[in-house]
Amino acid sequence: MSDHLATDAGWGLAAVILLAGLAFVLMSVRRWLFVRGGGAVECSLRVLTDNGVPGPWRLGIGRYRGDVLHWHRAFGFRRRPWQVIHRRGLVVSNRRRPEGEEAEGLLPEAGIIEVRDGSVRVELAMSSAALTGFLAWLEAAPPGFPVDLHPPE
Image (cartoon, rainbow, N blue to C red):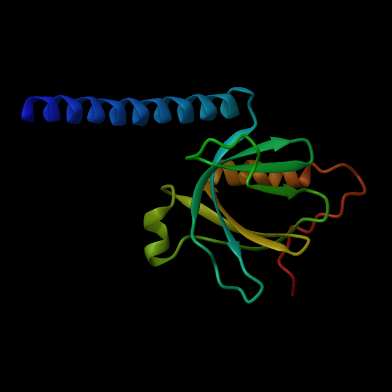
């Protein structure tokens, strides 16, 4: 009886390991599909509530698609973006370096930029090269696009 129980436990453990491996492969393929087309950067995001309280940082991938930035969580299976940031009317309201414990959970040498897209306020943390690319993407907006790159006074 104990041999039968040990065999069942072994098969159960093998199934769990197989499912974990399959999940890892699916997330890796998803990430590869996002990055292979170009225009993708590693980017952490957190949403700021109306009263300015920040949510948790979430690691993800930003993909530039014309006049929008699609942000996807790094770990997940969803193909649709979790956050869409529109270039039209975007306001960059703050730029800073990570402070204290915040720096431990972000990419090394990350810069943080706070943006407002309509009523949605988010902070994006990305490498200095990715941040330069983000600002260049904003400045390259077609004529007539209202983009504010300076903090409000």
